[in-house]
Image (cartoon, rainbow, N blue to C red; front, top):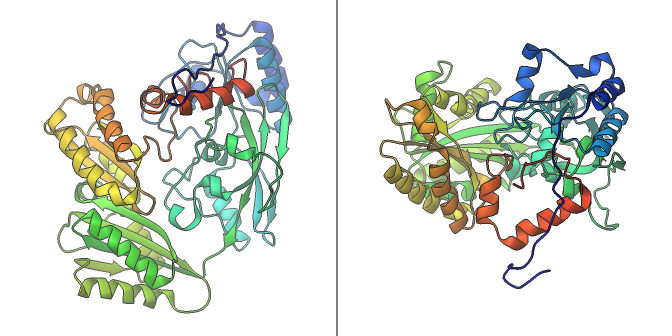
Length: 489
């Protein structure tokens, strides 16, 4: 039952012992997908069983690569009958362990890479229906060839898959202009935990017929069902694309500059990124293709992008906005890309930060979101408290200023032992997460909860909120076979 303060609201789920599937079950699963649909051999299976940072390693009773929704449904039906845990997996680019099986070898991993078709490209209706295994960059290219834009863009776009983007409600750099993956989703096809298929592949902008079921599955990290296809929104391909960088002294100044440029351009800003001096320094030190955008370093660098159609010259409008800011001391310096190649150079500096940080040794990473007007407060407090907790730790802060999504990363002190530093992950993360919640934020902006943050979700969010999640999980997946242990501990 519910109570006013959340106490007393509990959801009990049946506890199911997880035994490895029997040889008969495994043989049945192999027969469903055929000889091309399962993986064997230590070298072949290894990449499926570890997440990119190497924090989470698992084992699997079987790795399946189905080729159709029908095969996925048959797999789930067999696993439901035998109460075998299923771990859905896309491009395995996630950073919270959400697509890695547990270590006891009792679970079946279902990788959707073979289901990569674009079923329908409907440029006239500005929609595309695509299977879950389609790589994001390939979907972007197909939309571009049809004269459209699929605006979801993130660092892993050359290898991540649209099913994983949906399962984690990926954000990326264009949220300011186009919204998260959820905002781009019109309909889904989902295999439910009992093996039934829900075909909700609708292309309607308005559909108010009952609960909006697709939103249950977007961001659910494979814990409620397996997304096998989606109908997504497209946009007109921009006729004008303008990129600029500005040097600023504070987050407050950056926010004011963002608001001013939005007003000047008539809200045509689609991306607004912020880079700390240290993150820029790391890129310039370790990635030779990067060049310093300004003659001297500044505390923060603002990266903005604008899209426009045929009409008023967007570039000159942005230039006027930057000039006004320079004259009024809102920013210290600015560069405006003249060509697509120059625009790519500016973006390379932003996109290279994660790789550059790895060259500095161990790193502890946080994907938090706070109201933009409280970003400066968060950064000051989190920097002060993490530096006090571990003297010499180096804060590397960067991210999506326009939506308040900050990657507040910590690099090991110079000369420190990497493993000892990474061993501080939980202690330092609690500090960062506590401050994020205190300023009205979230511990996960776009990467999900997975294994890495399930305990923090339980610790920091109300019993009512977590209880509602458990209620949904118990209702849709009473046997608890869908991605066990992820999101909800």
